[in-house]
Image 1 (cartoon, rainbow, N blue to C red):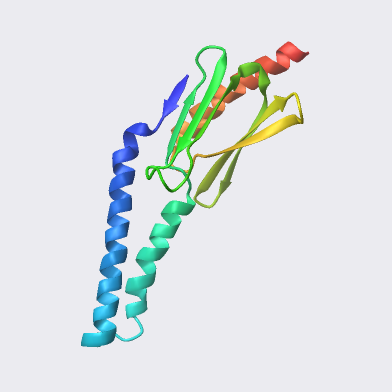
Image 2 (cartoon, helix red, strand yellow):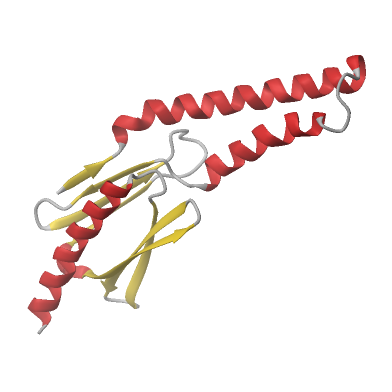
Length: 158
């Protein structure tokens, strides 16, 4: 099964650009109000804080692009940001038989995928992926695919 939200990258770029423009506009309006017009009182801080808060939330959600491929004998995970220099992209590929378990964690608007794989050196390794920008249907499809792999691995080990 293949899962990707790469086709939504243009939407994420647009939202990011819009948020940056709102921050710049907010700073300009705030400075003009403080030093020139004095039209708005303490409410002018809202013009400054709100766009910055929205931009921070956008980046705290994590990497926007998530790709998953379970075709063949390996599982392939890619997780990257739309802005290349902000985060290093994650890319992991490992055989299906190494997958021990997975967990999807939802905290408010942030979703994370934790994958536990078997490792020769330490016994197990946990890999973390940010899936906040996946739709609920895509998350359910991902869970279904990973469940199949985990169940197949448990049957082989029994």
